[in-house]
Length: 323
Length: 299
Image (cartoon, each protein chain N blue to C red):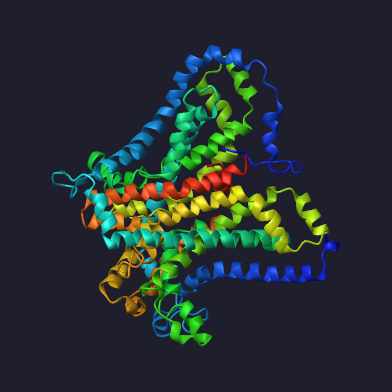
């Protein structure tokens, strides 16, 4: 894990320096003597947690892959079907559509929160270092910590036919565009996306803000002495130096979008029709209401690969520049 | 610095302040709205929809909840129990795994750390997990189904604690203790844990929050109403609405929702679910925000 210490001028996190400063001469000799005993005791410490990992995470992962090659209703005998389930996923237009929906969600869950978060964070950093900044930070972060179920109920109402959004539209004379947003075949997905923006914006803002405060203030000072505007500062200092934080934000939010389940479930449950169905929801439906365990597993494995394929380049891009 | 600000800078500053305030208000509005909705008279809710200035106020929703106190209190009890036990267990397991991983002289730390990071990105998949928990461990409709699956071990917390151990507990202290003949257990309990209270508080908060807000374990493993936590209670109510939605033409949702009885009761339930967090968050936000952000960067 790379350590963030971009600015020699600011003392990094105060506590970090304490341990690093002290010298450690005789470690190697000492280490060798106790290595054996150490390892055994180390294992004893790790064992409970590791067992749980193996049982809870790794074993199901392998089982997922195994199930994906069978046709199975969860109760009866399993029939080997080879790659048939994967072919079904790729051929069934409804299932392919869920993957496309996941990518459309990336725009709302990831691109918008990250871009908006960058702007908000740099605004807070530049003009609102005082109380307003602190309040804005807290308030923006709030949607991240409240129960998502409650958020779903709130937004279900805001976006309903008599809800606040439509009331506002009516008030400014746009009655013709009012609709039950979450029930509209074309608009349900952007509406779900809007909820995602609301939930994820605070997280991105705070994370990016933490990154900005680690940038050497002297850079901003000299930029300002040269009369740089917020825009210049933003493009030439903030964004390039926040590459790593942006990478983290993108990673977290892209996973949230591609593997979306909870936000979609509490707002539309995939409806109306299949218009907001994402793989996460579809796996749930296939497995628990249609009892097609094999197909659900195949979709799950493909989703996993998809996340991996999308995340790795982001990780590499954001880390490369740091080193 | 102030003197360096030009006129356009001032304009920018006030503009930015307005944008910030507007964003903050937009983020807050939904909360305000449900609190108001929960005290709005049911009839005026149906007649006029939602409004920040409702015609008729009423506390009926809350009286109704008091009448239903048995259900609501029980759900609260379940949520509190799950949160406390789950957080406590996780606070024991997490540092135990993090400690060896933080020691450079532990031989398998590389591969084990990789496993932890791996679980951050992937969970095992709901289907086999479900089959395992219900068939092998028989957790369905037990309180343990709300505690053990998914949240007991969080790779996120493990990495957070591991990093803290590495950076904030001086190596020399551990070595000195070893020279004095302290065994690993003593070092762990007497040195590592006491020196790491800040990070333990942080992961305790985060884990507690996760347990309190969880509804997914309930969705999968619980259909016995006596084991509903507060979030499950909400999601079941939400499910009923969605059932009606899917059964009817999509575009008339709004009407259906309003025709359902007890709209303000639902809002009151949502308020009750959010309230504890809304009250606690301002005081604990320092820990929670720092934990989430640092954890994300390190992970």
